Length: 155
Image 1 (tube, rainbow, N blue to C red):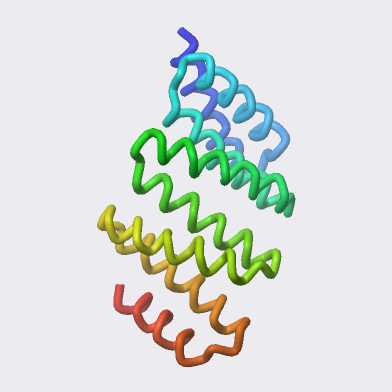
Image 2 (cartoon, helix red, strand yellow; image 1 turned 120 degrees about the vertical axis):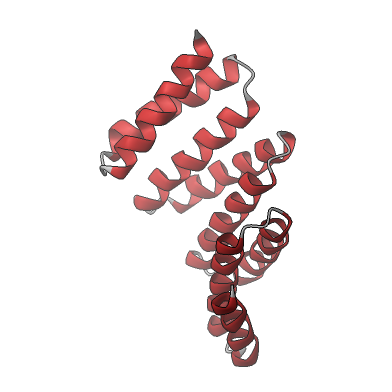
């Protein structure tokens, strides 16, 4: 059963990631992507890419992380997973922030706020607003930063 094996590899990748066994996690998740693709499981593949991004971010491979997240966003959109897409956009905003791409970070995080709000994810929205606060601080927009961070605290 290809789908079962893909799901098992995704779970194994998640465990290995938590144990900081990054090489093994990356190998497991790359194989899960292949198998989910074979099984035509769009959501499974999207979730694999989202986890793979975490491996790449821990290695500071920002180009590859951005590419992986672009794929995950598109697949979560295809699968109509609002929460999945919102989480991808949040991570993408953080990648842009780490790369000093402040316009892209703000755009990605604003979209994440909208989607987290749609999904009724208060924690997700609060995290988006916290990251947006960081964007505003980097731009010396202190009023906007304060407003964003206060909204995050409220949530």
